[in-house]
Structures are given as C-alpha cells and as structure tokens.
Image 1: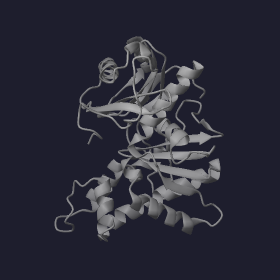
Image 2 (image 1 turned 135 degrees about the vertical axis):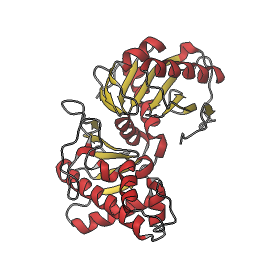
Image 3 (image 1 turned 60 degrees about the horizontal axis):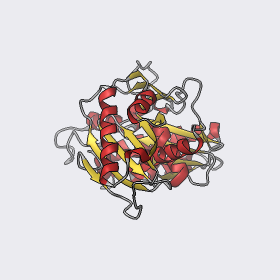
Length: 336
C-alpha cells in the first residue's frame, strides 16, 4: 500500500515557509510499484510531498516525466518559482553505478537494465542530479537525521519485500568494485539453501528474511483449520500473530529472526560495526528486532552489536535523497 493516497500531496513541515526566491531541492524515491516525490528548503525541511502508484509502469522515460510533472506541481502549489530548483536526487531499487548515474539492474517489478537515470533527470529538470540505490539512500538518511547520527560505522538493513544493506564505513558508503556491496540477500548462513541462484531470483538469505520469503514459509506450514490467519497473510501480519503465541507464526518468526541474527553476527565480525539499523516494512516490526537481539545475546558475549529500529521509518529514503540533493547543490558534486 502506498504511504499516501495515490496522487495526494502531503505537507509534513508546515513551518517551512516557501517563497518565489527560496532555493528548492527535489527528492525522489522510486519503488517497484510506488513513486514518492518531495521538495525541501535549503535546510532540509520538507515542504510538501506526493505519492502515487506506478504499478504497470516500466518505461524509465514515463517515470522521469511523471517526476518532472510532480516536482513542478509541488513547487507551483507552494508559490516557488521553477527557477528556484537547485538539484534533484533519486533512489532506485536496484544496483546503481553512482559515478555514471546509471541504474544497472532493478528487480523484476521494474525490469530496468543500464538506465541512464541521472542523464534523464538532468535533461528533464535542467538541474544537477544524483542517483543511488534506494537502500543506500536510506542509510545516508539515517546517518544525517536518523538513528545512526554520530556513528561513522554502521549498517542499515532494508527489509521489505526483499532484503538489502547500506554499509557506511568511516562515514562513507561502501559500494564495492561492481556497485553490489550490500547485496546481502545472497549471503549463505546456517539454514539457508546453498543451491545456485539464477539472476533475478531471491537469494538464499532473502528467501528466509525478506517479506516474500516469510510469506512463502508461512504458506508451506499453513493448512486449513490450522490457523485463523489466512494463507495469504503478509509478513507483518504473521509477526503480529506470532505475538499472540500462534505456534505456526512463532515458527516463522523464529526462523527469520534467527537467520537474520546469524547474518548480522557475521557482518559485525567482518566490518566491526557497532550499530545495525533495521528498516523497511518488515524490519521495523518490533517482534523481529526483539528476537534478533535475543539470538545475538545467545550467540556471543564478545560480539554484541547494537540493533535498533530506524527512527525515520518509511521516510528514510526520501530523507537521504533530500540531503544528497543539498550536498550536490552546495559542492557541485557528491562525495561517495
């Protein structure tokens, strides 16, 4: 479900006055089925934002055109001249080459391959653009205005339909040689399948911890009469049911949380990060965080990373995009 009613503008910072002469910055969160656009002032305060379904829309040019229309509409409604726009930043759900501004590949929901998104945005908007993976954008948002403020080393885990990580070391995002750092959905930990995974399919860890994987496990256990919760229940509904002590739901929660704890334990050994931030619709569920912390406590006394819920919640991606746009306009380039 979209965070806001489709096509509905939402003002979340009414104390951020807008004017024709005020610098304005655009932030975009491109999802597989949803698009969110926001405009902010020069201090990062969001003036207004908009959300709409993009289900069935796969053409990058159509998405960019929609972004341009909505940025202009948001600015117009707030009395801001189109000439006041200074920069735009967008997060996309896939592997992204930040240097080139190219979305190398997205999930099957969008099917993008080698899309020059930065070029498309700059041509359409007439201002500098910055493009990154959406989970990396969320991690950046947490570092600037969320639960990771003051931490130079931490990992943001985005757990929704799938699973991904934004890794910040020495206050810089880690991208890796092929821009795939943080694709932890393919990690192998105890209990996961070791069968080769074809491109585009969920990885071994994602198949247990991601929302679709949790649903699949629930459906494998479910039978008629075994539960009052329906077979097509969502991951968060299953976790809610686990808190009511339903045996099937508790089994699903136990497997997901234990497997995620193994992954966090291994990452903490390799990266020596003191903080892991859980985000995304599934990651924010309190039952998951509680069980992960309990498992980590059992695993080791020596390795005890702090595991917390995102303080920005569903706003993490847009917040990161706002701060990237501010940085881009101020410096003329973004340090990655």
